Each structure stands twice: as structure tokens, then as C-alpha cells.
Image 1 (cartoon, rainbow, N blue to C red):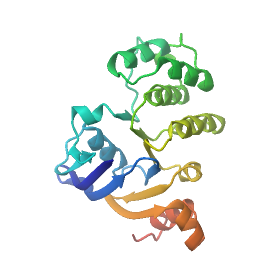
Image 2 (image 1 turned 135 degrees about the horizontal axis):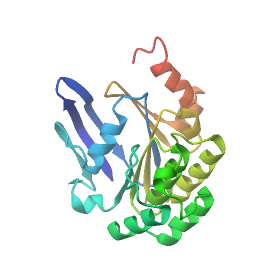
Image 3 (image 1 turned 120 degrees about the vertical axis):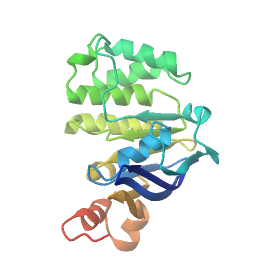
Image 4 (image 1 turned 45 degrees about the horizontal axis):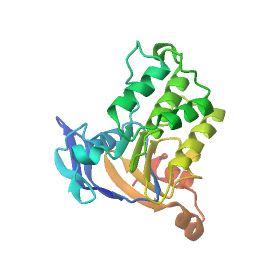
Length: 233
């Protein structure tokens, strides 16, 4: 479905992403794991076409990423991207104007779950409320691929359950979901595949269930081994 081949991104002398190749297939939930600054966000932005690779390319159904493919990919960035004059209802209307696959009915259902009032001004939202709004408006699209960059940032423990439920509900045999995060323990229970990224490199790929059965390890264990003190991958 979505694939990158030998992707490299350099900013001057700094290499943010270094020769990464990976595949995202429908019917699965993936995690891009690694500490802040490891290259996860840059990789996602290249997948949606917001950042141009220095080398390599992303492909969607074997064709280079372009306007047609971007219509089927929903991306949620870490940065707030709503105008300060907007209220929550305006955000929904804004998305409905831009995306044919946006469902106002689903958006309103997600707002109810997230306990967000339509009249709230975006500039008055706390970081947690803003995170929930970004999830609601992104998951209200009927996309084929969802790319969610740090969807749990700023979210308290109870609200995380609401967000995880919303993500799981979007999963089906025709959909792929990619979550970028450093909150590994929260993702363990829902992901199928974990891509571990360190200093711009893809250092390991783990199938969650296979890792648990064959090695008796969790993704959290794997994360500690790779990124903890003494990790040499």
C-alpha cells in the first residue's frame, strides 16, 4: 500500500533520515518508535509530500506520492494548525470543505466522546484538548492510510483510552494506521508491527505477537534494549 525505498533526508550537514526502506500494508496498525529527534516526524512528512526527500521516494500502490494518493492519506501533525479565530465547529467545516471523505456525523460523534463543545475557541484549548480535537478531525476522514504523529502527547490517562478506542474503530482490512510515539507502553496492546528508528536509521522491525511468543519480550522491553543506556543498535 504505502512504501518508502532508500529514503534519505538531509538538512545541510545533518542527516535526519538515513536510507530507510519500509512497507505499510492494509489491515495492520504500525508504530514508528524512537526518542524525540530520531527522524519519525520527518519520515511522516515525506510520506504525505510536505517534505521532499534528498534521495529515494515514497510510493502509494506502486505509484510515486502525488495529489491523487494524498487524497487517501490522512495526516495529523504534532503542531497546532488551526486558525486562532476558529471554534471547534469551524474546524469541522474547514475539513469538510477540503476533504471529500470527511464525515461530519463521525466528527460530531468523536467530539462527544472527547467531551469537546463545538463553541470552544481553538485558541483557548489546553494542549490536551487540542490533541483530542486533532484526533477527532483526522479520524473523521474515511482515508485508506492514517498517519498520526505523537497522537498521545499532552493527553491524560483517561483521555488516552478515548483516543485509542477512536483509533481502533478506524482499523479495518482496507485501512492502514501508522502511529509515531515515544509512549511505547500505550501502543503495545494495539499495534501489529513496530519500526524502531534511531538517529535517522531503521535499526529494527518487530512483529509484536511474534516477539511475545518466540522471545517472551514486549515492545517495551525491546525499546529499553535499543534506546536505553548501553543500547548499541
